[in-house]
Image (cartoon, rainbow, N blue to C red):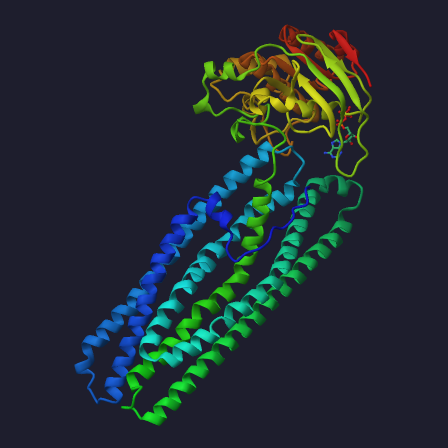
Length: 569
Ligand SMILES: Nc1ncnc2c1ncn2[C@@H]1O[C@H](COP(=O)(O)OP(=O)(O)OP(=O)(O)O)[C@@H](O)[C@H]1O
């Protein structure tokens, strides 16, 4: 797992605008709605002040004020309507942005070497993490826009009607964002640490579920309950500390706003006492100022409150952008759908002629020169120099753990060497389009990944273009895989380890035959097999090895017998 360094935080992350196209129009909508809401706030305050002043000081009856009352009701209704339009726009935009980000991150993860990010943490980031952006889009962003518009409108009206009140608001207003920023800086660290404990919980849990049968078999399952208790306890502690700050900061902001409004009220009150109701200020203006003053602070206070709800979303966004900013190991013009040797091409996009051009021209020679592979936290594997001749069968017989699977994974771009070079027909692997290279390979991994479905469904995965039942049946027969209609589950239930390996082999047969891939990689193709079955599989494989560059990891005598070259290191 790569440590993701947090980038400087801001109340608004511009990268959200660049990465997610739905975000920019949404902010424009928020601005338009914000302006309309400001107009409603001012009109509502003016109408209320007029009605109260007329009824109280002018002695006008309710009947005579009917038009103003109707106008006030209309303004309040318009304000409610604008708020609901805002809400639905927020949900739409949030959904669009989340989908766009999920797509981009998934595509990026497909380009990055496998194992760079822990699957449990990535799953938490893409599901629960991205959902945290809801609060950011639905509550925080609209308030941020309102906070930029409403106070300006209110200040202009106050300056025109009673400038001293405008001056007080102008001086005290910046206190709210100032407190907010100070608290926000403190909260950011807490939000980061809360996310870290969510991530730890997620991958601990994922690992635990995957390893539960083994833990049970060794009587260690109960001990894990304690570990989970500790992790969840830590998560609870950090969440509560974040909530505590949220409550305290709301209190501080509330206090600052209330004191500021009180100063305005006292000033207006003194002015009214000095001049009387019909004095220089007048009851209507005084009421207008008093009603408007809290409205100037309200959106800024709300920004402070919603900042806490959105902090997790922003922390998530920073992690997503860190993943999106990582450099894939080498050029890969192909996107997610072409990544992975066994990954199917999109049915709709499959075009045989186009596909042929996307393949390497012929069976290439592969060379590893002084290549060293290293896994994080492990001693590097021994340096390796090896030539895999073009159009020949090379069998790797190095000891278990020497790095045979790693070497195959490097050809598919799943592992990068720490040093040394890998060349294909004298072209550095870095210079070859990764998608093109992967399309040219049929690969049988040691532990093929299964999906829920039938054996036939699993075999079809190797080629997404129209594949006939006869082709699938032939591959299954040649690989001695279980019958096509047998159902299997992604967790491997319903199928033995040996049978699963043969499903992987059937995929290789299908892919090599139908797509004519010039490179075949087979990792322990006949492990778990009796001699007869092994022999029949090797007989079926023999014609496919002609004029192809074939690399097989195996210690079996029968496999070594079909090799043109044997390599040990
Ligand atoms: N994801 C990983 N993280 C850390 N270490 C790994 C990882 N994958 C492999 N290794 C280590 O790298 C070394 C080489 O592993 P690899 O699977 O390539 O060997 P191998 O020669 O194919 O072994 P075998 O014949 O048993 O399949 C081993 O020591 C293994 O423990």
